[in-house]
Amino acid sequence: MGRHPTAIVEDGAVLGSDVEIGPYCVVETGARIGSNVRLHSHVVIRGNTEIGSGTVVHAHTVLGGEGQIRNVSAPEAKLVIGAHNVFREGVTISAGSRKGGGLTQIGDGNYFMAYSHVGHDCRIGNGVTLSNGVQIGGHVEIADGVILGGLAAVQQFSRIGQYAFISGLSGVSADVIPYGMAVGLHVRLGGLNLVGLRRRGIARSNIHSLRAAFRAIFLEQEGTLHERARHAAETWPDVPEVQHVTDFILSDSKRPIAPARVRAEGQDEAP
Image (tube, rainbow, N blue to C red; front, side, top):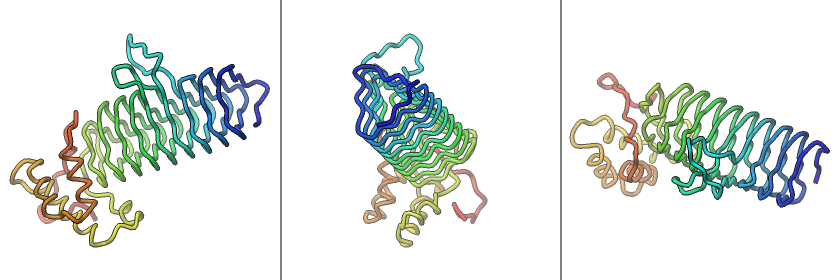
């Protein structure tokens, strides 16, 4: 284990094997850091934070700070981070809040670029990418494989389904379906994240079914959104990707589902 002489590691912090702690870092009492974690300079790890093995934390990052809520104290709140994450310069992630259940949770293998922020009580899955300056409000749920472009912002209580893509400078004030591609100040679905689907090795036949389901759910006019989603679930019962989308739409949520952009007659939902 390497520890720079200017670093402060308080009594009661638990460090795994081969942890590297750089200049002017602060690791507070109660923090738990897994093996092979590297903290670059000026990193602050609050005492309510757990970090999984192999994670790299760059300069001026603060992990486990109090939720940015007025007049709310939650000394028991935690931040739990999985393994093999990368947090670039100036990242901030808040712990949970008493009202929100007391836990912010980050999965494995995520990459958070410089000055991105994750608010209190968020749940972020595995393999998520936050580009520079992305801002995530409290109580947000982001599933596996999501990519958010630079300076995108996500409103409190929103959900983003697995392998969705959020364009840079977008504002997410509604739930984005799995595999969706969303863009705009108040995001609209521009179609499906076809590049992401192909990179994941999804079968061409499944992609075709998913595109047909997308058209049936979002571009048809008859019935409500939930009625169209239920019909799509019945029409493509053996296509897991369609079921992911319909389950997402039909589940309880505090936010509406992001709608599709209006397109000219005959225009497909994606190139």
